Length: 177
Image 1 (spheres, rainbow, N blue to C red):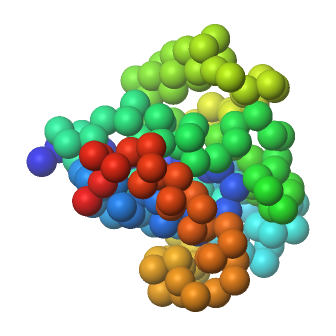
Image 2 (image 1 turned 30 degrees about the vertical axis):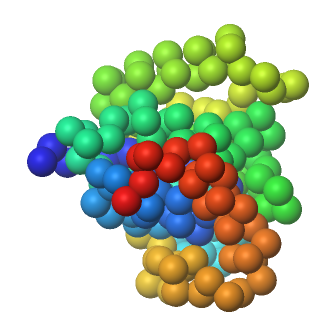
């Protein structure tokens, strides 16, 4: 087992967490905050958009089973990388599309992936996903962890998260647990 981590922001962390928890080779997914200037921010503070943090998931994965590129393929299917600081009804810099790289290898791989996607995609608008160095990751409050798994009947889960999970199942069924 060769464990690595990838940290991604693509709107609400509940959506990303629900998707990546189902991917074969993913060991753990933690919702949190990255990219801001305030140490140890709270959810309420991040929601103001004033801290510079994005809602993120940090994915611990076995790179012998699933690659960083595979995680990026899923990322670019389950969110809209062409909307600046917005995913659906979630608006603000805390919902930006970003890849927080943890090494020069990840930065290069993500940059090449975005370039390829930009060249060969069917999107009407350009990709606005940013590449940002991961300096600090602050774990979100306990009630955010496993949100979809723990609250599948809530309206937000039914209306927003379930369609992303369904899209994952449709596009990546062989890669799921």
